Length: 451
Ligand code: PHE
Image (spheres, protein in one colour):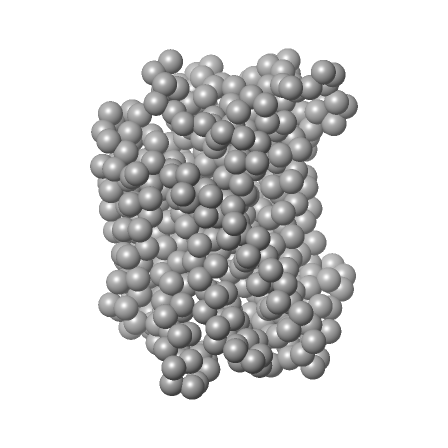
């Protein structure tokens, strides 16, 4: 098949793990998880999120890898082939739209992260600490956030256009552990601040009263966003997985590591939020307000702040590469253009929508709203809470019902002498639990049905 000849593959088990994890870990962990937790009542949201990862996220991640590796194509032809009908390529096409919508706001925040590297160094040079007003000036500006956003997109195009270089893979492999160490330093500092326990309670003390249809949908949406599911990213990455990779253990490790990083970020931020009396529901700015505050209480705090944002910036690159890879691989394979040209075209579409998302965060452009949501929030809502769950349902149908059970288990059981019992259980979850649960949460969250 012509798609497969030009394809690179992950060379080793550890490479496959690192690349998948690199796509999963990003702003979702250190920015979105904490701010959504803060806005949705803390522990109730955390609980709903953990359940979503276990009951839906992991089965869908495995299914995307199974389908991707079995078909060895990008998502559009992969689903047409796996579903044995052209109509299923819709999953791939919807994924292209989701990738553009997500990147429109993702690059805005990534731009803030890059800006904060320089801002923290500048602030240090003049002996001050970055405060909420610095964040408002940046996010509420016009040219400054747009310039950063464009810069971020150019950077990603260069990387993707050149092929997903082994440089980036190697870099993330060494820098991810560094991010983890720095996150632990944040955790220790945050947990030893006065009144930090209130933050731990906010995250973990049971609070079922706060569970609502909207909270459940937003937790499910985050699980999809976090694990890069429902839009073909993990299918495409699955097509690069070597046959020697054991899909279920690999996916389980990715889901666990990703969840751990999210929880560590929450443990760094909420104790500090309560200690400094910041509002936990500050929204998208939460990270940019609390991290400089936490580190300002440490010797050489400016250095830690700058390092934190450098590592966060690196984490965003791995995720953005995997996001732009979806339309890039499609355009390059289907449209027959060079990867570079395909990446430039994808980035252009992302920038056009991105300008709307970015400017809608500024009080200067109050008109950039639709259905009462800013463009930024709207793109986020449509992609995470609608497109990705819908994609998830369709993927579960193709994987659980159209692909035969033998084909599914055959791919999952590659490199095993005997099929483990967990594989059959997983297949049953893909067939019954995941699609039913996603459908109920989606309809309930959108107010179509009342449970
Ligand atoms: N998982 C990435 C993050 O948490 C975002 C992402 C979503 C990447 C969808 C690819 C596809 O930042």
